[in-house]
Length: 389
Image 1 (cartoon, rainbow, N blue to C red):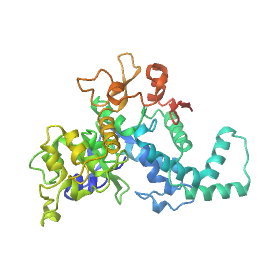
Image 2 (cartoon, rainbow, N blue to C red):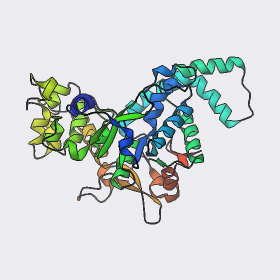
Image 3 (cartoon, rainbow, N blue to C red):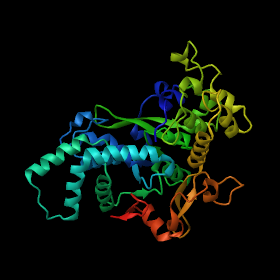
Image 4 (cartoon, helix red, strand yellow):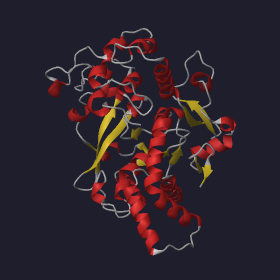
């Protein structure tokens, strides 16, 4: 999930003031990695697309091989990757999901059909024209498919590489793993990891001339120090990150008219060197409100206009989902259980009570075997019913 203006403005001067750090500085750490981000980055180098268009540039022209190469490089640099797979798309992202699926299905239909034939019947033979047409279809694709994900997962499981499945999105699941001590940090280009409470977030992955990787690091303990050089409103108003993400706009919710200046405040003349902003943004006013959701209801558009009931209800649902979305944990017997991120407010007895529904999980809620299969990546929950590999 992306957040508008997050890395460039929401986090102040973090990117410009912080130095790149060699990945080896995090040697011997377990790092959760959102595999879907890697797949999207590397898709442009698959088949006969130019490898030079991928970010960072990769030498291989095959998606699976690119993932393998990255994994090998991470291991050589002393990192233990823990790959986290997406689960169901949450209902609050239905519009975003539908738009992405429409592009994927339209552009890659020929490629997907041929790949599915090959996976279903390994002895099937293709004509030269079918392969040419499939390659052209693949080149038009904007997003990877569940078949790409399944092929990579099969390779990882065959090599006993640590993988974890998510009930919904990988973002919340990775933060849950960090909270539980299962990983030491998170590698992701999605700024929402910070908004969800991530403590150590590695981002802006790039390759040095010697072939090794380097990253920018968000360390929450350092970032929240009052004497840091980043000058982010998030440092000034701790605990307001989720509201900031929603007011700036993300995949869950966007309020028309809200921009980085409206939300964060007008830039001072010294902004380029100091990152300083005036205290006239929505966050400055929101921080002083006793009931922040009520303030958003009254002033959520540009800090001056009331939100319509429909827009506010969507904002409220998105806020609760981001903070307390269902994730998977393990009980004392090693079975997967559904646990809300960040626990529950004291006035609620369950996450379904808090969110107002079971998010379409139905019988899965109490199916320990199915939940464990999802957590262990024995199934990929691409539809409301998990489909086994």
